[in-house]
Amino acid sequence: MNRQPTPGDWEAKAENAYVCAQVWCDGRILADVYGEDRATRQANAEVMAAGPELLAQLEAIITQLDAAGLIVPPNARSAVDKARGRA
Image 1 (cartoon, helix red, strand yellow):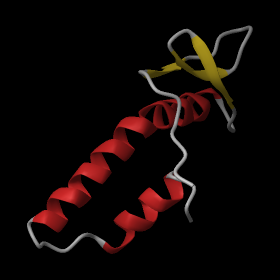
Image 2 (cartoon, helix red, strand yellow):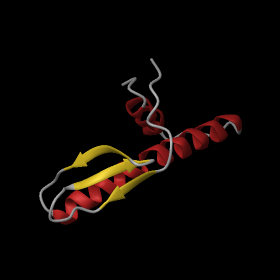
Image 3 (tube, rainbow, N blue to C red):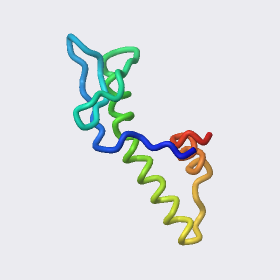
Image 4 (tube, rainbow, N blue to C red):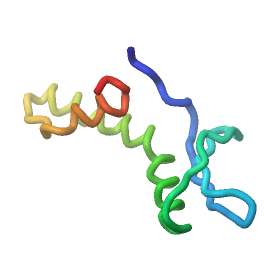
């Protein structure tokens, strides 16, 4: 199964006195983000929000390396499989 993440631009929203850090996409909340402290929660949200773009870029790099006959770093494919729910 090749699951797809929510399409659109993901963004991290900082926590405030009323809500924890969150990840949003096109006006919809995707995730409440928790962690040990405020800085960690914000860092976690930022990494999560960058996820779809990072995954797409890694897949493009793997494709380009394969096409050029170059070696793909050993954990690159397993990272993509993990993100796609195939690991």
